[in-house]
Image (cartoon, rainbow, N blue to C red; front, side, top):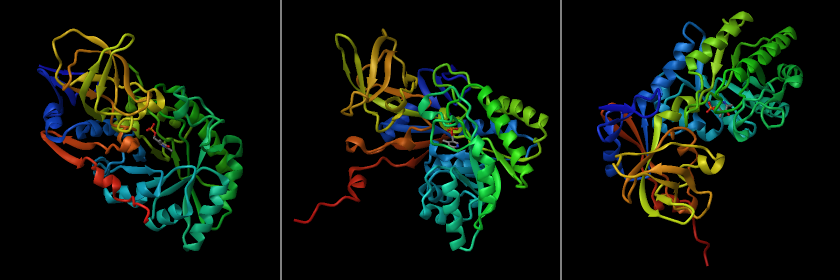
Length: 426
Ligand SMILES: *Cc1c(COP(=O)(O)O)cnc(C)c1O
């Protein structure tokens, strides 16, 4: 008997009494590679990408995977081979994505604080577009490009000032945050860009936030951006591509975001109605391509009953999976091999010396020490945010493809961590 545990995620299912990712037993993976262990399903990533591809069928579009969601080489390679472009936010991400086989011309560079060195590196690599976030950045980018005898292709990230109705830390398109150029200042900024010798205006972009679960903020942002396209083009500056950013949410805990194809058929209808349907389009999805493709496997170390709370202490911690500590995020936690025993209410916590080190609060589980748990929806903003806090080595990562399980990252050792440190000579 097979039963899927996340709606729409057939790649993660119980077969009999065992949780599988595609055709691979998660218990077997944990035995072989240890825990904490990240496991990603290639089929699940490609299915998520296919929803975007269906949504944009017949359109001119470049889907740029926002790689900060999960920047492991083996994950990038899946998207590069599927023909994706990439949205990067640092020089380090540029090196990674080129190593994974990306086409430089399909790379776009976002972020509010690009350094001169990063600009130079990206210009020399021949990336497709810089998504610029301030007028000051325009001046610096032009200078760097002129010094290299090049012209930098630019898009301005405009701030449509719409509320994505998500967590404040991941909301980016409102007036009070650091991202983008205010709507009212955008035409002036475009004139400024068009007048600089080292720049070539190619597009416009926005990104209003993350884990968005409704279509309305996108529809509102699209209206605002198209208003600007009309104003900028009326000022004599051609906009070749329109980039609507990322942000589409996933189902963590009964969330019901629209499917990518359904969302985009709605958005494209608006685009058509306003006469922009045949433009070159771009999107920058991150979480929605990888989030539900990954699980983090962890072993129960100790059960610690208490007067007010019972604790289930596991070997994964906030350094491995930072989203709960960082955003109070919810991840479902399920047994890899369910027990037929009474449930108990637990806080599932890690070994790190912080009260903020928890993976899940108030979870009903039937577990014993030595059992394996799977933390679900752990493909995005988990491993890419992992750290060495408490001198813990970062987890290993596995990419499952049908019956095969490829190690895409070995577990980090203490020698790896100490490699760049030195004692002071005495
Ligand atoms: C983070 C980010 C994305 C991806 O966001 P998701 O919510 O993961 O889809 C896209 N564009 C920009 C500019 C970003 O900063």
